[in-house]
Amino acid sequence: MATAPHERHRDAERTQAEILDAATQEFAEHGYSGARVDVIATKTRTTKRMLYYYFESKAGLYTAVLERAYAGIRESEQELDVEELDPVAAIRRLAELTFDHHESHPDYVRLVMIENIHRAEHLEESESIANLNMPAIEIIGRILERGRAEGVFHRSADAIDVHMLISSFCIFRVANRHTFGALFGRDLMAPEQRTHYRTMLGDMIVDYLRASEG
Image 1 (cartoon, rainbow, N blue to C red):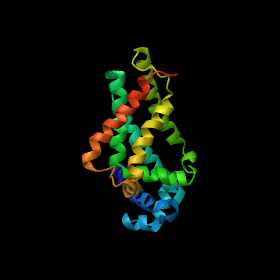
Image 2 (cartoon, rainbow, N blue to C red):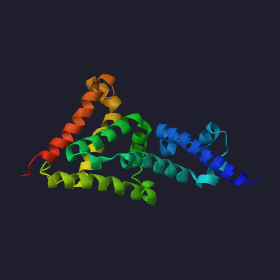
Image 3 (cartoon, rainbow, N blue to C red):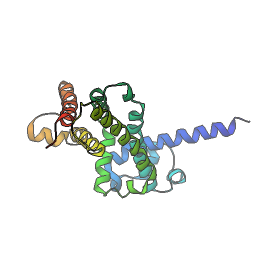
Image 4 (cartoon, rainbow, N blue to C red):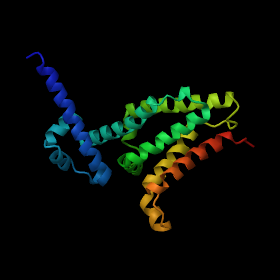
C-alpha cells in the first residue's frame, strides 16, 4: 500500500506525457486555432475533462506543448560539452547540434511558425521558456569570449545575433522545404544534400566570426 501514491504519480506523469505527445502532433498539424481538444483526448484514450484537469484549458495545453518543445533543444545544448573544444570547433558543433535537432524535430519548427502567427502571445505568458533560453545565449557568449581572447574571432559579435544566424538557417531549411522545392526544384531535406548544408552552416558562422569588422 505504501507504493500506491508513487504508482499514481507515475501514472499521472505517463498520462500527461502521452497527452503532450498527441497535442504536439495536433497543434503542429492544424495550428492553435484549428487543433481540437476532443481529438487529442480520443488519441490518448482519455477525456477533455481530464485534459483540462492537467492543463486547465486549450491555451494551457498549447503553452505546455511549447514549453516542452523549447526545453528539448535547450537540454541538448546543455548536454554539449563545448568547454573542452577550441572556439572554432565549439561554435561549429553548436551550430551542427541545432541543425540536427531541427531536422529531426519538424514539429518544433512548425510550432515556432504557428506561434509567430499568433505574435508569440502564448510564449510571452510562459516564464519557463524565457528562463530556458538564457543558458543557450550564455553558452554562445562564452565561446565568443574565448574566441576573441585567443585571436581566432575578430568580430565583436553579439551572442543573440549569432543564435539568430544559426536558427534562421536551420528553421528555413525545414520550414521552407516545400515552397523552396516547388520554386527551385531542390529538396533542402534530401539525404544526399545533408552533409553539404550542415557544412555550409558551420562555415557560414565561423567565417562570419573570423572576418574583421570595418
